[in-house]
Every structure is written in structure tokens, then in C-alpha cells.
Length: 451
Image (tube, rainbow, N blue to C red; front, top):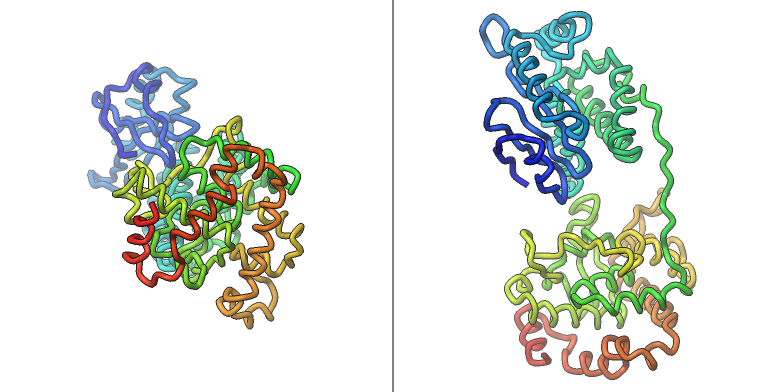
């Protein structure tokens, strides 16, 4: 969401919309430099002003005042006025030992030490963008730096390096307010930015300030399904009202792909002749682009969603495989109410890996199908696209066969499943849409004729 300007009050802040992703600023129309940082879990009173030295602007800093759930707007505005007054005099409101932080800032600026925001900008341009990292990855880093570390943006990295206790305290604070995983993630971001900055600034200490953190324990969630769970999941899925979302979750299960990669798939990425779906920019960027081999069930899924897209979202369907009424034009949010659909997203990726084992697919082949990195020196000699044509497609088919075999007699007894996936419906769809067309226009024309 974009930043807004309102007259800040307790009622107005409570009514501010929660962003779907990231954060935005709600600036006060009464007091310049006073605003609320509105995130998904927290709303923080903050001030921003220019530190001045000898009448000239030295730097701009942001200083957090407190959680909007714990402070009234009136109290926060009073504190903001005090902070802004100190900033205008060249004093950092939260300086330790008088004005030591400001003296440290001045000293570091004199020797050219980068501030956090300067180091972040270089890391963004020279590392993330240049290496083709996805927008979602960049958004995550940006959220850590510009929201969670907003009060440090104009703080030199040398200051943080010389005060690792401050970094450890910040991690403790984030663990309580934002959760252990978010706290760990933000510190990994800080560590990466510092290491990158040190490559061109040898004045920075070798010890990374993030090394002072007592990391929170993280455990991989084990939420995948086994073959015995699939029948119940299909009965949940068939009841989804939106058929495009239904086909999205089914394809996610059958291919084990990350949801973000499928969300941005386009009709022209489908090659029906080679029976592949191209993923041009998965996690890791364009250098990790790969083709997903398609089983028979996956082909039918894609044919159905192309037809549903044309009927429900004709404009967006020209560009996106999974069109939707969203700012991007494609499915942007694929979460479901757990009471409606118990498994989605990464749950289905874990399920794919579990079912692959049940289907007798080797760990090496399963990793190739999921586009995982293959460890070991010999992995560099594997030509993946050569395997797609025959071997990996047969492995993909084995997984899809196990998935649909788990339905048992449901495809003969459950009316909704029969209408969606039954032999009659599949045969009609399959025979009316040929798989040979070479161009997108020819393919869409034949789909239109079949519809």
C-alpha cells in the first residue's frame, strides 16, 4: 500500500487497513515528521527529522516511539515533539552517554563508513537485482531493513559493529513483538548486508554484529499428506467455489512447485507438444529457470483452467494462466480458510515429496522435479532438460497416478468429483482440445472451439 496522510487519533489508527504484504506509513497532518508505521502485526509510532550540524543538514533519522497498542496518540505526539526538538538541535533522542551516538555518527561519516541504508541500497542493486532475485525475495529484505530496522537506517554500520549488545537486544525485542522466525530472518538480512558492505569497506570490523544474537530455534514444519489423506483433501477441494483456485491447488499438488512460481505462469509457458510448463523465474532467479514435465492429469488440469480463465476473467486470461481480479491480474493470494481446505501452499509441496517416495521415485529425481539444488560435484554433469523428455516425465506420471489412485471408488460414487474429474468429463475435454498446436493463438482458438 502507498503512504497516506490523516489526522492521527486512536480511532483513526485502529481503523487503518492492514497491508497484505510489507508495510506503509500513515503520516500525521498536524505534526510534520510524526507518523505510524503500519505493518501486518504491529503499528509503531515513529518520528523522522534532520540532524543538523553547524546549521547544515548532517543526516535524516527515524526514531521509534512505541507500540500504538500501548501508547495513546496524545502521549505519542507529546513524545514526538520532544524528539523532534532534540533532533533539530543535532541531538539523537536515544543517544547513550549524552550525545555519544551523534559523535560516533559524525566520526564515522568523516571516514566514509556506510550507514545501514547506504549499505542496503548497494546490496539491493549490486547483489539482489543483479543476480535476478525475485520481487518477493527483495520485498522480504526490504521489509526487514526499512520497517524492522527503521530507526537504524542512518546509523553507520561501524556503530552497530562496535555495539553488538544493541543488536542482540534488538533481536530479543523482535522475537517478542514479531515472532522468533521473523527475528531470525531480519538478523540474517543484517548479517548479509554487513558482510557485503565489508567487501568494499575494510574499516569495518571482521566480526559481524549479528554474531552476537542468540538465535531462536527453528523447526521445519511437517505438514505434508500421505496417500491415506488425499481422498479427504480432494473432497474439500472439489467444494471450492472458484474453479480457477481449485485447479491451482490441484496443479500445485501434482507438480510440487512453489505457489509463487505457479501464480506468475502464463499461457505461453505451456508447450503441449513437449508436454511441459516452463517456469522462467523461480526462486533463485532466471538462472534457475526450468521446465516442469506434465503428466496426463496435469495436462487436463491446465486445459480446464485455460477454459475457466477465458470464461471468468477473459481480459486477464490473455496474459495469465491463473487470472484473477487483483492488481497484478493473476492469483496473488492463494491461502484458504483451513476449515474449508486443510492443506495448501507449502503443505502440498511437502505432500508431493512424500507421495514421490510412495511412487518409487528416487530422491535425486524428486529433487530435479522440484527444482532443488543437487549437492555433489557430479550434479554439474546432469543435463536436466535431456531428462525431461522421457525419464522425468515418466516419474511425474508415476506420482500423479499414485495421487489419483488414492481416490479409490470416489471417482465413481461422488457426483461432484465425477463432474470435475470423472472419466466422461476428462475424455470430452481431452478429445476436444488437441495437444499439437504450435502457437498460442492456435491453441486458444482450439480451446475456444472446444468450449
